[in-house]
Amino acid sequence: MSAREPLYRAIANQLQDRINAGEWVPGERMPTEAVLVAEFGVNRLTVRQALAQLRAAGVVDIRQGSGTFVANPPPVLEITVDPGRQVDEGSVHATVQSVVSDVTETVLGEEPDPSPAAAKHLAIDPADVKRLDTLVEAGGDPFAVSSYWLDRRRFPDLAARWVGDAALHGVLREAYGITLFYSWRAFSAAAAGPVEVEQLGGLAGAPLIVRDGVSVDSDGRPVYYVRRRIRAERASYVMHYRT
Image (cartoon, rainbow, N blue to C red; front, side, top):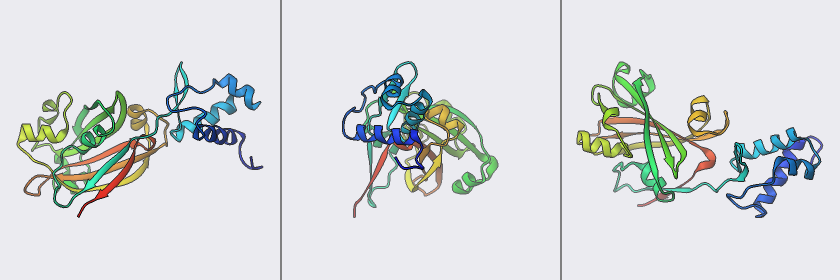
């Protein structure tokens, strides 16, 4: 430990090294706080700070009343970019289902949202924009919070039609006869705010992977603008390019 390195960080680094070495495997319960306090000769607060740092990094899961467990490694989500095939087939479902079973998406709410940015993406007046928020779960655990902005006049009853375990592309195809095509997708990063913490768990300020983009119909008319937020430790993306 360097002279300037906080004690809790040094302990966190040592625990990280031991996890990397296989002393505790994913899903295994780690020693209790009391055991770690005795082992490192520090107080309970220092141990909690060390575990909190590991939790923020996605290394461990702290389960109330159960203890601290080594986190499972994030699934590697593969995306293939094929210029010859740009049909939007519900990427979050198809991508996650390739590595995790039991993927569901539930509508959390619908409300008017006169967002100038969304209106620009959709090429409509801000007064006509509405937003649907959904929660994607994989294997019963929260995976992503998604927000979809659409034209309220074009899809006045979308939330009522979006029931059960269905992807948006399927609802739009079955209810409105619309086949979706990708216009663009982008990746960025953001810090978790109160909404993301409430829906996804984790800590305020923790890093999120943000994937947003626009899908269009067969005439090239924008159908929705989507912004999806995923806890950074929950997924790793790989892009495959085809020519």
